[in-house]
Length: 168
Image (tube, rainbow, N blue to C red):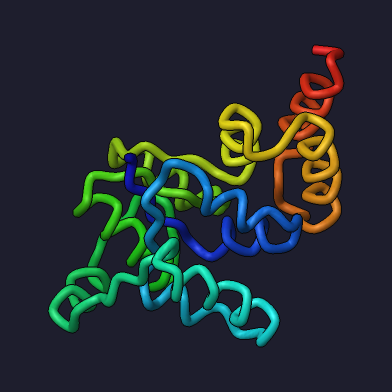
């Protein structure tokens, strides 16, 4: 089983398009940091994520005080002021695991640091490839993602739509 650290952008995408149970059903050991988990503020979201924490499908890594200092002093090529995002990068590097993020700067930084990094579109592909959702559901999820995430690469979503509709 592969290990993955996720940031909040991926969690929110999957929550918004209604595929959290399927995501946690993938053959991934999924972690996030306490800093990232604390970014979940709305009670409906928090209630939903808490189900996966209690079941052990989402594991929270507590960033220790000595690590916080190291993380805050991290020098990054791609400016990212978010301490939460830095904790995800730090832990992904420390655990030598996949980083899941939709943040462009964080993705670029992870690639520069030779980490495997993927976003929500890759997760949708994994859901289809692992029979967690069918192509019809994937099309619904992609169309929903287009309306809920203004930053998602529309050209990539359109490619997936064509692929799942059998046009590509």
